Length: 196
Image (cartoon, rainbow, N blue to C red):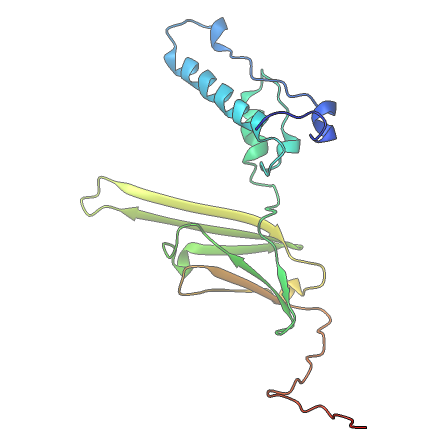
């Protein structure tokens, strides 16, 4: 993708990107792990610079201070950030809001592996499962955490969660002011035709 100054966002001109300054040059050259890390950081920042106008999570919160390596990761992978991908959608047919939570692991998690916590209007969804091999030498741990908000028009105290056969969890909450359900006829309705 070529850079076109006239079509880029205004914020790109207002907030120039400061690239990673490797710290390994200040250290002994024999520290190959630090050199590898510096190469990876430079590669990731190059990717971010190319894609900075697309949906990089919370890219506006990143402070590209080359002396603070952890800030990049803190901003991108913060546990306290509200997940913008997880949203409740209103289902007017059932007078409720719904949110389908995908764990990204198919049906790996069981209902007993899942915990849903509610504080104010924020919902925290956590799933964790450990599996050990038959010989006991290997194990796998999978963990998922999502944080998102229940809309203002829903009764958060009546929030419910259930797992479907596909492994996806459906969160539902009734609307505060239910809309009247229209009694629509099930079949075709004849319309009078005026003949003159």
